[in-house]
Length: 181
Ligand SMILES: Nc1ncnc2c1ncn2[C@@H]1O[C@H](COP(=O)(O)OP(=O)(O)OP(=O)(O)O)[C@@H](O)[C@H]1O
Ligand SMILES: [Mg+2]
Image (cartoon, rainbow, N blue to C red):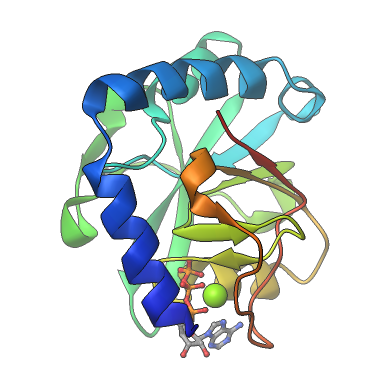
């Protein structure tokens, strides 16, 4: 199947899950992630801010801030310029931006990618080799390739998002691990 087809199928399925089920799965993923060595060892965490039926990261972000981590979140600058990342000190540093996704407000400090220890990745579909299909913007693939170094990448996903095999192009960057329910 083509990436676009896989993306649409899996996102449709994810949207159809019961909110109560997703809440239970979110709890499991929250526990696994915040109990992980990746989390423990990271001082600076780049994490997506969850939107709609994505695995909830708001609770993870609050916990990371409480634990004294430096939390940085992306902002889409433009299709051409891609994403930049900014430090937030609390959830109130966020406001609705690109497609309604919560993004850092004006005044948040931009953080150079050199400082990032761990990237927590969103996505539509994944496979067991770390293959990943995002939302079609190429923003994460580009950001990671422009980092110009290896950085630890952990994806958060519901089990139904992990397939046997997803189609990968040359620009697509694999994740190192996937935490699921
Ligand atoms: N490193 C890159 N440099 C330039 N263009 C890129 C790069 N990575 C991806 N792209 C382009 O971005 C477009 C979207 O890519 P793709 O379909 O892989 O998005 P995606 O992985 O679903 O999105 P995202 O990475 O934001 O989650 C494609 O045209 C792809 O060629
Ligand atoms: Mg891609």
